[in-house]
Image (cartoon, rainbow over all chains, first blue to last red; front, side, top):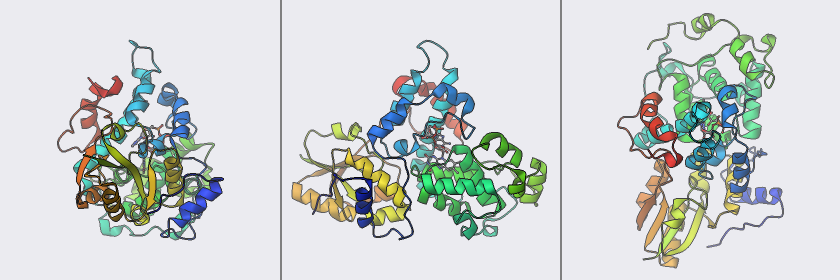
Length: 268
Length: 141
Ligand SMILES: Cc1cc2nc3c(=O)[nH]c(=O)nc-3n(C[C@H](O)[C@H](O)[C@H](O)COP(=O)(O)OP(=O)(O)OC[C@H]3O[C@@H](n4cnc5c(N)ncnc54)[C@H](O)[C@@H]3O)c2cc1C
């Protein structure tokens, strides 16, 4: 048995080797992320975290989020060491309130991993019924072409799809918007959306991804998650194109959208 | 007793407790298993990220079916035990279960040093317990 090389002249050479070792990859799968793997880059990213600014800006696409997820996902950084460093952002003995949100988000990962450990079969199966007034069979099994090619009639959604496909990363809020669009606007099964995310996210994780999708869908939460254009404009501007004319399907009050998306009423 | 250390995709750092758990390691390996990665849905982006990560790690990379490769490596190195990292991933756990070797699973450093509450479902039920540990270094109370 042959030991595989670790020395490459450049990234292209490494890429060619990865491809040679990966006959199952489709020839159309050619995109590589600018995010580089490895502990060295992970540590550099870790040194940049700002857990205090995170607390008040994390919901904005331009907010001070950590970008640590692919490193945490593969154990390159442990949740423990990230938390230990975050604790140093407040002097010892002072209230931890300013960093509470950051540590709570780390805990979300721990929580999903523990749920996964207890119930591995929840990853691909509805944990609960949909609370959307629809039955599972009312949702399509496959992702429509216009979503895969970023050609939907909503410019912001197309921006999120393209970002996902080129960078392998999406901000948490963008994941929520795109997942809700797929499941509720287009009535596609959450599993199809989850598979699409897992194929592109560098941090794609069966538990964090699929259980979050079920949370959006309402098969693992008390109600479906959806949003409106006003919310998108607040959090995703200026990164995403948020003009109403380019995103008409997302416009309206929450009541109007609920009536459109869930005409049979939301159950709990 | 000599140990073969199998590093899988969820434990890719040299400071993982796995590496200090053996007093007699023979070899540390990562298996590049195309069929496993396809089953996990990994595209080119992820695979490049993983290979780049492996470049810095003290492991030999082999390509092939995970079970067959680990069996062959254990035989060549005459390892009597396989050490690997604990994971919730059923595919990896199935592989561990299918190996004709003693397998010892080494846990990741805990985020919160508390047992898994029964019947986990909603985050805040977990968080009400976990927050007592989460703000302490090493998650200990
Ligand atoms: C539909 C959907 C799919 C998702 N899929 C994944 C996935 O496949 N992998 C993944 O790691 N996260 C996933 N998340 C959670 C979250 O969006 C990402 O962890 C986060 O956006 C990663 O960016 P960051 O590292 O800058 O996070 P930060 O906000 O800086 O958070 C720090 C770390 O905490 C953890 N974290 C934060 N929020 C969450 C959360 N809600 N759930 C779990 N862990 C969290 C991550 O490890 C993250 O790196 C998903 C969320 C949604 C709504």
